[in-house]
Image 1 (cartoon, rainbow, N blue to C red):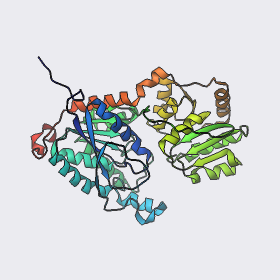
Image 2 (image 1 turned 120 degrees about the vertical axis):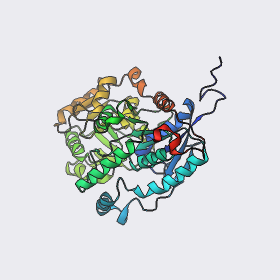
Image 3 (image 1 turned 90 degrees about the vertical axis):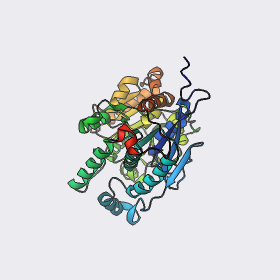
Image 4 (image 1 turned 180 degrees about the vertical axis):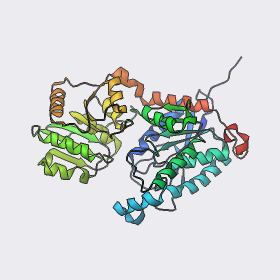
Amino acid sequence: MDRGKEPGEAGSPLQRLLVVANPYPPMASAGTTRVVRFLRHLPEHGWEPTVLAAKAAGPAAEPPAVRVVRAPVPWPKQLLGGGKRSTRVNSWVSVPDPYVTWVGPAVLKGRALLHGERFDTIFSSSPRPSVHLVAATLARMTGLPWLADYRDPWSTYQFRTYPTAAHRAAHARLEAWALHRAAAVTAVNQPIVDDLVARHPWIAGRAHVLPNGFDRAETPDDVSLGAGFWLVHTGRLYGREQQVSAFLTALAALPPDVKALFVGVDESRVRPDADRLGLGDRVRVEPLVPLTRALGCQRAAGGLLLVNGRRPESMSSKVFEYLQAGRPVFAISPAGSAARSLFAEVGGGTCVLPDDQMAEALAAFVRAARDGSAPLADPASLERYELGRLTAELAALLDGLGGGAVGGHLRPCDHPRAR
């Protein structure tokens, strides 16, 4: 008996996925990387994505051959011109995030799209958690299955400061409301999944780890850092200045040809400590750069610096780029963290605790990196985190959710998940 062609086979139609994404290019944000990488590989695995995003301007190149539908943001992202006052006002009035006023226009745009065309499934990836509100609402309206993806926690995020207990409760209630409508949940590591299941037990059995990874489709720039041994950090610091200060203190005790480059970091986060310690031009800071240059800087380094937060889920997505770069990693990471688990699995990391005195450990790391004895990631173990393979895992999850609706004919009562 002919089983017919599966989606993604030659001559067969692709299944259609609505991806709710914000930020999204042309916004320049590290938060776009995971989604953009999945979009690049999903058609190879039987899924054609359409992106629902916010209207935006910025320097980042939009992914080619991906359809994007944009909804306006009636209320600007930053109130009162930015700065600390803006941040305080936003924390009071913008729940769950400063794009809360995008939710309504995005729902209207998405509803029209879903009623006019056939889609099989909805996918959203946070932060920002407003994407989950949009996706949950569209899932409720249409009955389509929704996969909610977490790159960081929402209501328990370690870097979110709530102005009042009522604000904390509001975030928790919104998250619970949204997740009651999710057919499945993914997160980048096990601690986030464990936290979600502990707080929302109804998703047990439907919550999965879908890690970040590296993408061979991204070609690094050819970068020269100049003379000396360079330790390179790429990406934002997210409130980890205390760990950076401890690292710079350890750096100051090393020979003057040992230097540090911070890429994509606001200079005010690094320069005051560097100047206080007399490091001068031994510390360089570059603003946000294209991903290809950041990858090139990683490969030009003698060693790579990873600065994590203090929670178990703390693990920047750039750690996979670091390991793929083939350079040893000096990691400031708490005990029991997802980052330490990754290094235990694939190798490549030398770890210290956030409150450690780092001078001796950093000196030993630099000596080992220079003489070639520092640990490197095992290529065979690292292969598990290649993006084509991870996208196949995502596609398999999407395939398992079912769905499939003819635009214009589906109402919530037509689908069992909407009941």
